[in-house]
Every structure is written in C-alpha cells, then in structure tokens.
Length: 146
Image 1 (tube, one colour):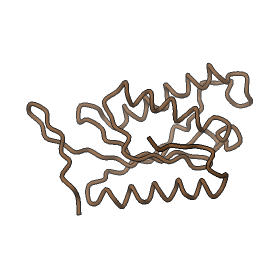
Image 2 (image 1 turned 180 degrees about the horizontal axis):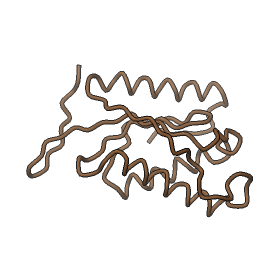
Image 3 (image 1 turned 60 degrees about the vertical axis):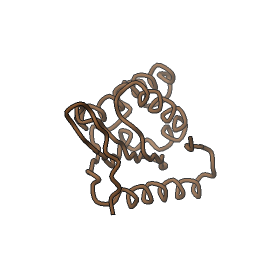
C-alpha cells in the first residue's frame, strides 16, 4: 500500500514519482562501462541544481534506472532532457577524443517512463535488484549508496 509522503506548497499537495530508464546511443556498452561512475556524479550534481529527487538509482551494464520524484512545475520530459543533455555535454568535454563520443549525442533519444502511484516499494525493490545484478556482472565497482 502506498505511503502518504505528500509535499506541500502554498496551493498544492503532491507526490509525483516516475520510474525512468535511459540508454546510451547504440548501446555503447564498452564506452558506457568506462564512464558509469562519472555519469552518477553528473546526475547527482544536476539533482542538487534542479527540483527533483533521486529516490532510487541503478546503473546496469548498458542503461540507467532511476526512480525520480519531480515537482509538478516540471514536466518529466524536461527533467529527462536536462539530465541527458547536460550529462552528454560534460561527458563530451571530458572524453571528447574517445571513440564514438566525438559528437555530443551520448544518449539515445529513446527513454522509458512510468508513473509510480500504487506501491513505490515494488519499484524500489526492482531497481535495487537491477543494482544487485550489476554487482554480480562486474563486481562492486560503483557505490551508489549515500
């Protein structure tokens, strides 16, 4: 059953949670493996700058799962666009000479989004299992616990 974690503003009471999956262009898993930790740092910095909260996070071998809590004043599209656009520019500036990163199009245009309103714990467990699967694949190279 859903917990009531409503946020309040002067004229609004809200709880907007979204499960989002983004993938790199062409599923560049070799390149993606090299910059996964940096992607986490970039998105964490953007989280502090814009009005959204990362509830749960997991980086698989070639895609990223996020459970985000987004203020109603922003559209999901805008937050996903900000995350993908800003991170692609930073990655390009840091690794522009690497193969397949000479263009500022690191992420695919595609993304998956689903609203989470029934039981947020199910989605949290799913994302946690994605993280555990990744640990099994490549060891505990990344620590996303904060």
